[in-house]
Image (tube, rainbow, N blue to C red; front, top):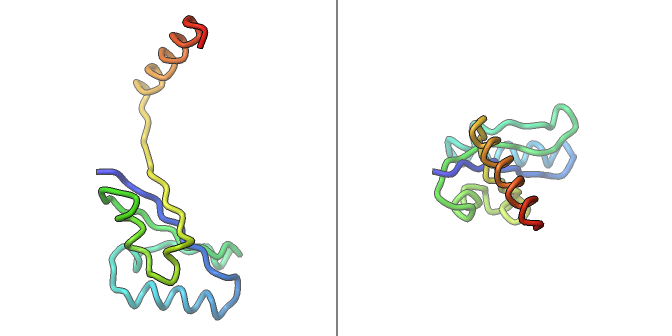
Length: 98
């Protein structure tokens, strides 16, 4: 199942931070109640990951007030074998002149 990084930004004010945190905690969603926040370091965003089937499903986890601006990124892990495949693919393209 795909894994997504979900980034939710809010305004850089104390009131906006408190509101966002309260909304996330009030949902009771495991994803949202375990979000990581950057507010104390001046980055007014929350991040969490979710293993769901689609990007739309990941977006639906985000509270509606923040959904439109949420950034959803599908995460991928690579191995050494993946590097070999990528190198071979690029070599073939080079030989083909594409």
